[in-house]
Image 1 (cartoon, each protein chain N blue to C red):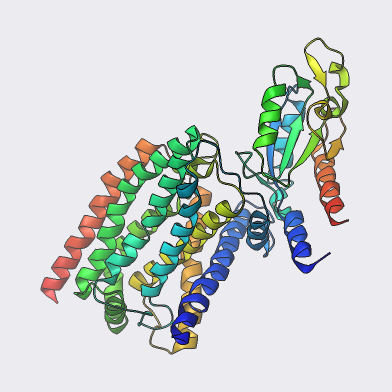
Image 2 (cartoon, one colour; image 1 turned 120 degrees about the vertical axis):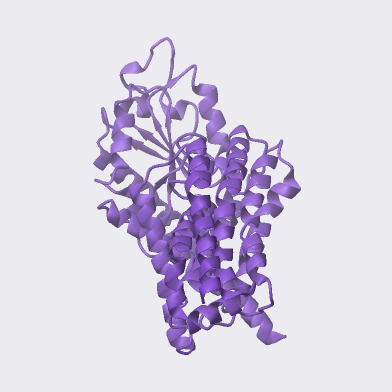
Length: 311
Length: 143
């Protein structure tokens, strides 16, 4: 009982995820700044932002629905933290594996977008509503390629359990190279999920103030920011478990260091893409997802089906 | 000062998020404020971020005298900000009304409408002066 609570709340659960999430945000912002030839924020910056937001006043708008407005940040945080229980960290074994947990992880990672939508919609601000609707529109575009590319990898491993997928790929590391298209597609889809440039259309601050978070302030906004940080780490951990399953059998310490390196590598890739690309319009984004990413993910499924027949 | 209060003050000094509002300036001060936010001066190394919504911001950076048109909007934006909040008046016009003082459509400086925490004079105030004023405001929080 105490052991499970330790696993869930401290390591590798909530506390570890929060610290690692804020650190990943720092790496993201620092890399972004260095690529623009700036100094960038100091290492404690995300922590200072979080503490400052916790100490600020919570404003709930008069027209907002207070219950939903207040509960949504907690809901988002809970969903992302839960998703981490089923992602392998330092070995091929996740905390509580069961068959079919890859689907559960993918759906748990969808919940934050839904909560951003509900929170924005019930804050009854016009900007928040436009941002929320854009977020949901975007969800339908990137979610399908992400599901298809991750499930294509699962197809080759012949299982729906994330633990077994990782086990399969660490036994046959050469099969990973066939999944490279799926990896590229899911990196792009992860950018859409995290609402970062070029897919930051839902919170485009030059157009619609701050999107769904326009009316959020203080503690509630701090939890939303923490959710996005944790979502970044969990998403990167999911991709590294499925597409980069190297060195997971070398013992917990080496595996853990490799896990940190892999996650920061994916965060660095996201920062690189964020630096070199500008924001797209919503219709361009949807077109790109359905015209290029979905067919590429389908191609990945076909490749894996053929591979399964050959091998 | 207790430990919690010390940590909160530290966080507040290290993470000032600003929102920029033109209350009727001739655009010169606005250009200088934008120049202060560019990679050349890189205010993000002090934790400064430009935010779009008053709900997220800690510091309201105003430029220009308060015109009668903008007065209600300025009060509204000030009241939309979450506590604790600070106001910086950038430029001579924002400090006192400047050359626009006494004009038929001008009410005066920013302090004629909302309380101001820091005044940065200059016509226009240079980016270095703006950064210096913001740093002085933040160091005054320690005291």
